[in-house]
Length: 216
Ligand code: DX5
Ligand code: ZN
Image (cartoon, rainbow, N blue to C red; front, side, top):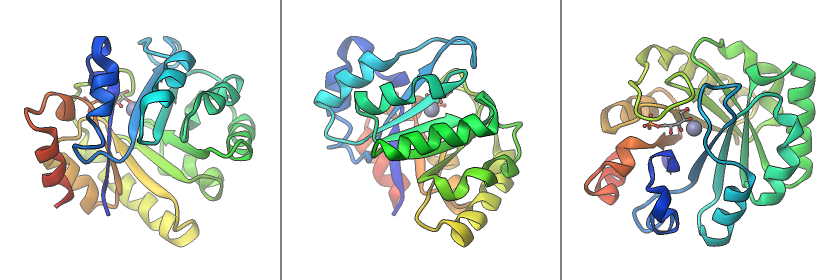
């Protein structure tokens, strides 16, 4: 069953509670929260207090995507704030620190996950595959919503689907960036089972219908 994770980066921050409460009834499965530090990516968004606030009002699990430098420094805070899935970028630290961070996340009862940027090869995920409950493939350069989908990431997605099926079949495979009705279907055909959608979800005149079409 395909899952949808709307990215609140495209929500109305003045009415964040309203927008987040509307996700479940429209058919969403997770709330995707994009955390950016202005170092790992050239943009700054939200952090630990906002995750803690969302935890109080969101009936859906929080899928927290850390686009920050050396995330091991903050994983405990994000877990304690209420992340249900916590994703790190493999490019954001040395492999030994990434492993230690993932182990820490798991020990705190949260689902550990890693993400790869478009220029990072699928192989970079391999050392962490058995440790993770979700792998995230970026289909845009991380940093901003509303960018165009990179169709050339589909072979990477297929490769990761094969490796997940062979080595860690319970692991989810998520895509993030430029997902709309057409590109979302393409991702599902190529092995993704979780789709992040920011602008396509929040700009849709009828998110429930958008969600239904993707899941059909
Ligand atoms: C980009 C973020 C995405 C972003 C997706 O760095 O990780 O989650 O919000 O936005 P859209 O769906 O508009 O590309
Ligand atoms: Zn994201």
